[in-house]
Length: 516
Image 1: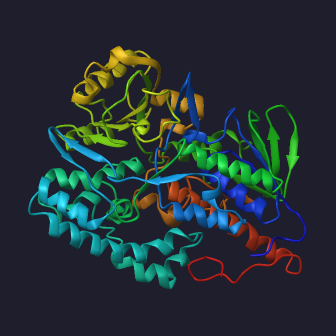
Image 2: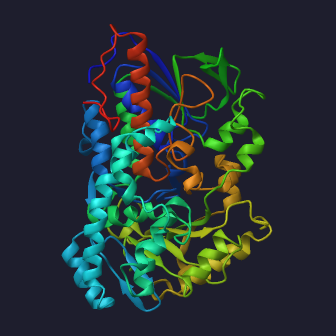
Image 3: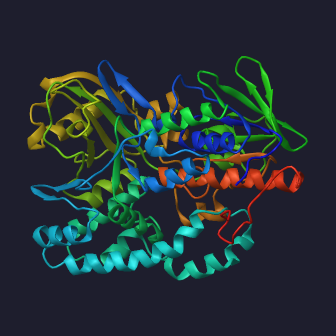
């Protein structure tokens, strides 16, 4: 694709993954780009966090499908691998069910052998699952790469072909129960629903593709953490003449004649542009970035009535010794269904929670001093709509997490080795990072908030305003967030091509919404 001949201006609100991806694509295609970020660092909820000599990813801790990121870098004349060293993980992670440990791989033969060892009798069921999900993924994937801006988008051939594979009348857990006999193995292939902030017992059956994607494409660790991918995007944006302004909050999106004309910054400065890309948290933006009365579809009452994902309590620990755990490990509650229901249905804290541990120092020496470890601990929890006094219970919640950690043999006595610590609650996600309801994974992904029923990439209520991130189609999770950026940038370029056909070149749009 050739760049536009006359530079058009684009403003990006928020330097999270989606905003940086959009800014990189736009600047690489010849747009004049300014990114405004409220926080002092880039990356949004996935920024780098530094505690003394210890470094952490605040949010996302691994990459799935890095080839999708490479596609974006290639589109702007760069290669991701010139900026970031990537390591594929094997095993993917270790899953702990009491004393039983399951370590799957992206090598199907190895995983089948591991299942035969840990869950004998289910190995052939796993191979059938992977075969069926491959066919499903090939049908569903095109729907994740194009917008759903009108109802007739459901009638396009790719959507019609995908319909039998979407399993909309089933759940993730229901689908997996058709394959696996052992309940723990079902959990091991359904916990990925947490990436959407949902219960596997409620999450649409479409999303069994998440575990397939992990097992087929593998998981990858960028040296220095996932945040290094965002730093690479920052570098490319600047190489193409784009500007990133940190600690420069946007106070309001300026709407003139029904279109986004620019932004009003917190310091009173007005900046105008041809297009505005919104990467800030969707619901917080609807409530705070528009003059009252501008929005009709997304009024405060309607925003409150949306369904939201769960949240998470986080511990970031600088530990003065090496930890003998895998890069990623999930430690399941004895009654995982009860734990999930307490979090998502009853909105209470579990006495026996499941926890996720990220131990990147086991293979990345850049994140902690020699002989020490940067340890990241996530306890999925209700969001802030729960009747929980997060401040009053703060120390109790932290202690619950520490007690759970010290039940793990490799972490016994951990509290004696902590040199640095930050404890982060859902309330802090809400108040410090402007995440509505502290819902880490944005709007929930039920059938009533997917595709056309999710906020559109080309925002419905204001022209020249485009959404990227987990609050728009195709949804939350880094691969889909990057796809949202590709979709919105493509829509911007198509709009400019229609307005100035002699000054812009656009490749022919395929039915899947991609450019050829």
